[in-house]
Length: 138
Image (cartoon, rainbow, N blue to C red; front, top):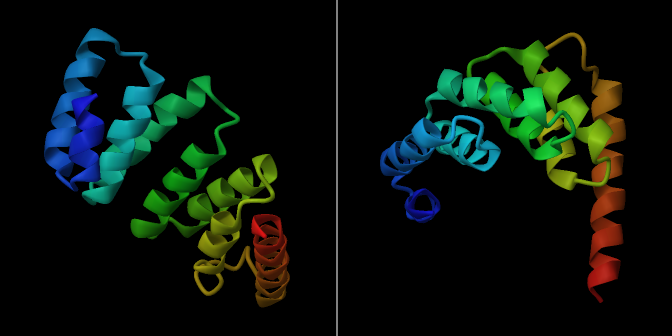
């Protein structure tokens, strides 16, 4: 897909246009919806990204990456509770992904639903996962 190449080149508007053409022909193409949502996110069209990620999650409720990215879109528009919920869902699906805990740490001062004590526990989890990953690479 040409849209992926444009995304890699950080030509997000062209990427969005290409994925939109694909979606006109195949409105339920989850890969195109995900990729267009990611391009929207990268180009700071946060609500459009959320809309595409919503469509993906209606069909694929176990996609931790989509929850994480939608969480980052919510974070960007200061919907902190929704961001925390999505990042927690990503962690629930894939508890070994360091970047999800790192994203969650960004919310420590943003919502009363995430305490400093929880953040300390998440920092410990990040350290454990990073150590585990570095040992597996040896």
